[in-house]
Image (cartoon, rainbow, N blue to C red):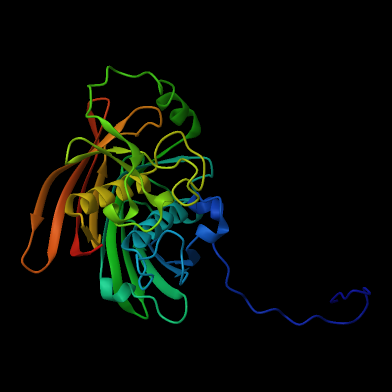
Length: 318
């Protein structure tokens, strides 16, 4: 018998299935507004998944400087979320486990990133060839591939590698955090972060680099209260912060022009700590006759290379 407010006899209509985001906990986000995925369907082999999602027309961080396009790194953030969601929701890895991201690449078609008159709905194909049927995951580094389409047309593709760490193992890994080695003396650091236009940004709050007296080295100085880059707590700098630092270093190297990061490939060697200087160095740059450039970037902390990144795309007037 159906129930009503009075408890007798009046049936309620069956509500249609409405669109919502996936649980924010599954993508390690604190704000629902920063969850870009809306659903997932698993294929029979347990290794392929079809996800849906949406990007807003206006985003405080993942928009182009003129507001006409989605930022290419929004696709990279979407890939990051998709990998975590599939691992938790489809492979059964419990919440509370930690993800160690070893690499992430993202290659975009900039024309397909233009913002239209409605939010951008997308479809995302995810392939996990290292996963086993029945929800089991490998203890070794796992690979995952992504293809993002908009209205059936490819917009971005990429791949990543990551490991999953249980809370006890993570606690042991991080037990020595804060024990620092002797840090080589670095270049003199400017008093203030760089101007937004010099690093391809429009808001001072989004600048993550501070200039030094070396023309190809910057200090990574993100705002630890940034609502997007530090949406949820952590004891180290997130991978997306490092990718943003690489993009901004590429722009700084080309200033007063800027580089749109149509293609990025980043490898993460170890955790980047919050309490020790991390230097961001440009180690190579190739400018091409077609108006594009490729910039190689490394991050150095405590005398060790902690990440490497290659950023490519068109060079534009900042």
